[in-house]
Length: 479
Image (cartoon, rainbow, N blue to C red; front, side):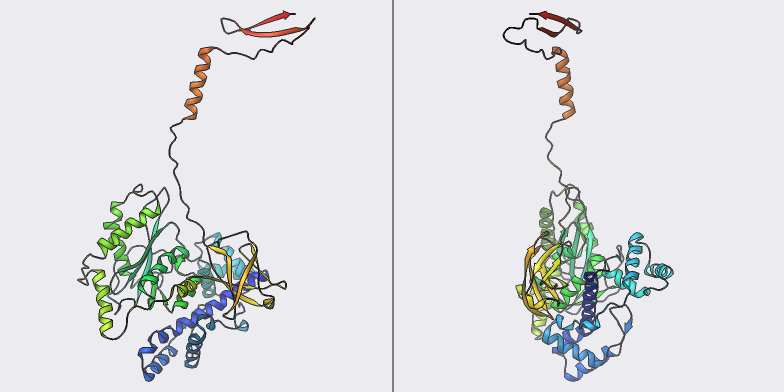
């Protein structure tokens, strides 16, 4: 395996460790201001006393001392402070075994991690454990779980608005001959649709395109509840939520308890909106999104909910009014710049001796003092001409583009649209037939060479002419 690949695995391992640490301390961070010193101590002891699923898939316990230390670091340095040092992030899985495992999984996606682990061990004599492969497959987006529509599960309800959002995707009609799907985020307490967008691709970037405006307009949620589909298990999304201070919770595969509200909303979309839409109703995605927004704001948000006996908009406003009366404050907003920073992509690179790095086929120059160091670059996936450089979480300027072959990241692929051109009314074959019939009706004329000018003693010119029956008559003209 090349050095760049090893650096990538090491960086991903570091990020997974940091995300694990944040998941452990998120409860303390969210409730710390409302707890007394004694209550905080009880909460930390409770967290330390239970098992947590580690970054390698194994269940582990965390000491109270570690929890307190991670909280202090997060408050002082943010998410990047939770990244472990280099000596703690070396990959533990043999590169050869991991490459073979990926190849086996891609060859037959239906193979389970247990089956792949068995084949790798049989082939190489040893190999990674099943849990380890599950973690690597999920990180690479090879474990995609599609949960169908189901009945409501349980009666859990968040106490306040923005305590918990639930997100999912729904497949819709075709637009301009191509498929569409809806990414939606629902506030658990009020049932208000806080974020939504119809897109063509089911990936993390499109999932974030609905989440980002939701946070900008409705505030930052305490937790986000998602399934295990590939758009929602990407490390980029986890890092974004960690920067915002939102706890990410995934439902267990095959046990979608707590997802009843979003499933019920999707049923409402099918029964009340999609039933009115045909494959040729909309000609582009903009008109589709405008029409859906109009339905959400004028119909869904103003419709009385059978369980809450309030409209989603009324319940949303009532929750914030009650919070204000209790002195709990309103939604937690972040500045536009902080929101932009949270949604930037992040990758790690090792700087060459000539102070350059490579990414997506492009070459960039960085500060000479960074030669040989492992740095983090943050960037907008739609603009690879500007990369912000960080070393151990501290800004170190920008990477200057030297050779640019790609302007967008490979995850920022454009939507695939099928555009049907307007018919011209011209049939080429009919035109050829008409031309042929016209030629037959007027006879066939062959090219006749022109006799040479001036004296042509002894010159002979052969001319072809058509006789009355369409035959060819050869004449000799002697000058």
